[in-house]
Structure formats: C-alpha cells, structure tokens
Image 1 (tube, rainbow, N blue to C red):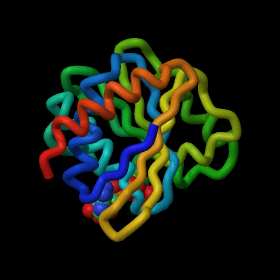
Image 2 (cartoon, rainbow, N blue to C red):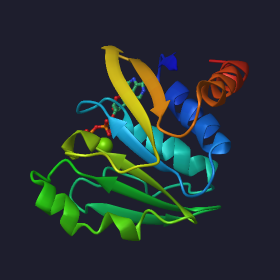
Image 3 (cartoon, protein in one colour):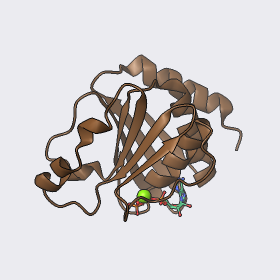
Length: 156
Ligand SMILES: Nc1ncnc2c1ncn2[C@@H]1O[C@H](COP(=O)(O)OP(=O)(O)OP(=O)(O)O)[C@@H](O)[C@H]1O
Ligand SMILES: [Mg+2]
C-alpha cells in the first residue's frame, strides 16, 4: 500500500493514524535515506501514544525507551556495520508483546526479524515523501483501511 505525504505535518498525521491501527507487540522496520522522515514519523507515532516530546534521532544512543499508552522502543542501526554488532544489541529483549518497537536503518539487517511491518520512505520532492507499507503477517485490507482513515482525516 502506498501513500504520499506533502509536508512533515501530513507525515505526523499518517503516523498517528498508523499508530491507532496497530497493536502492542508489533515491530516496525523503516527503510529510507537520510532525511527521509523516519524520525518525523516516529514522533507522530509517539504523539498518538501520548508521548509528547523526547523523541529525537537516536543515532548516538542506539536505543530510546518511551512510556506512553504503550511502551515504545526507538532504535537506530545507522552506526552498526556488522551482523555481530546487531546481534550484540539483544533485540529479543525489545521484541516483547507489551511493547512496540520502531527501527531506523533496517537496511543494516542481513536477515529481517520475523513478524514485522515495513515502512519504506522515498523522498520524491522537497516536502514530498512516498510511503510504502508492507508486512509478513498483516494483509492488504488492513493497510487499505488505514489509508482510507488517513484520507478521511487529512485536511491539509
Ligand atoms: N513530507 C515530509 N515528511 C517528513 N519529513 C519531511 C517532509 N517534508 C519535509 N520533511 C523534512 O525532512 C526531514 C526529515 O528528517 P528526519 O529526521 O525525520 O529523517 P530521518 O529519516 O529520521 O533521517 P536520519 O536517517 O538522518 O535519521 C525533516 O527536516 C522534515 O521537516
Ligand atoms: Mg532519524
């Protein structure tokens, strides 16, 4: 499923709608270049869980934990180069039923963890971003319902 946003505000709204559609226990894997909007999307996602601030790029601290309506782990793999370094994070500890985990720079995985939702972001203009959602366990109707809800709420 594909959605284009035309501003950071629209991306935040898209993330809020997405957050309201998914359950605890989900793992969100971002793919997208520097400045694509992974952190912006995560801020919108956190906002929907009642986490107002404190979400910023975790590039230096690899893992940030936030407490909201649900527990949120925000991870950035940008600086990791080998699978050994990724294994060293002990990701299993974060992939638990009561938390939602969002991972920036999932390109770094040699093999993707199972039960994921992929959010691929492409920069298609200065303020335009193309989002492609896919999953190994959620089907197309799930994402189509989310798109409808976004289009209903998008009043920008
Ligand atoms: N439609 C849009 N959606 C999201 N961000 C946008 C959009 N248009 C412009 N931007 C700008 O693009 C930048 C996205 O930055 P952000 O930190 O979210 O990217 P990132 O993918 O997390 O990058 P990094 O790989 O460095 O962590 C922000 O400055 C934001 O204002
Ligand atoms: Mg970022």
